[in-house]
Amino acid sequence: MAKIEGGLHGKPKGSVANITYSEARGRNGKITTARQKVDPANPQTSAQQDQRNKFTEAQNLVQRIGADIYQGDFNRAVSDLPGFQSLQKIFLDNIDASGVVSVPADINLGSLDHLPNLSMTLATSSPHISLSYDSGTGDLGTTSDVIVASAFKASLEGDGTRGYVESVGTKTRSDSPITLDMSEITSGDTVISMVYVRGKDSAEGLLSSAVFLSGTA
Image (cartoon, rainbow, N blue to C red):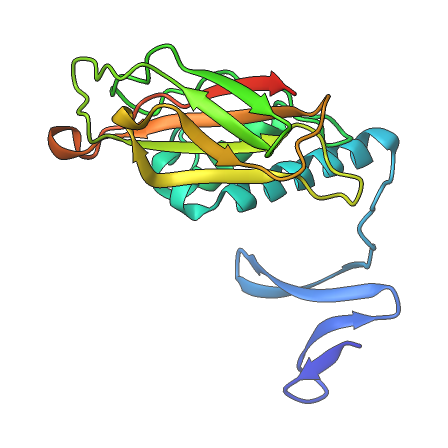
């Protein structure tokens, strides 16, 4: 309902019937405008619904990965976007409408050397993921550099959730192989891992590229 402020000859604000009143700045100061009230369209075409689903699943995945990873390490990593949006765009570009994630391209986070000969294997008995690599440090790295590893199932579970596990700040270049316990890995499951290195000691503040791997049990 529209309200008239300042008495009978005041300025109306709000809506009455299908007319909406508001203020705008004109050549001689503020003026009252009136326009037909229009409810915003909410089209439900198949393509638009698919895009909403992709956006939601990409957002859910970034939230699951968490601020400890995206907030600083992925800040400005993609198109000068903040960390959350950078990581979300990576997944949005690699997810379909049913929530299945394909392997993203590696993302350059910094100049630190990555883990040499990194590989991933999955085990269905005592379900876990194993990440193996050589212990070389490269030109800038140290043996104390910390491994950041996240792994998630490429497809959604039957209940709409997604299997996920991570290791942040507990393993170093000298700890190969890293084992991540992921419950209910069964034959045929595809898992995607994201692995990068945070520098320590003389490499403090440096990051390696984020490398994405895929494996099927």
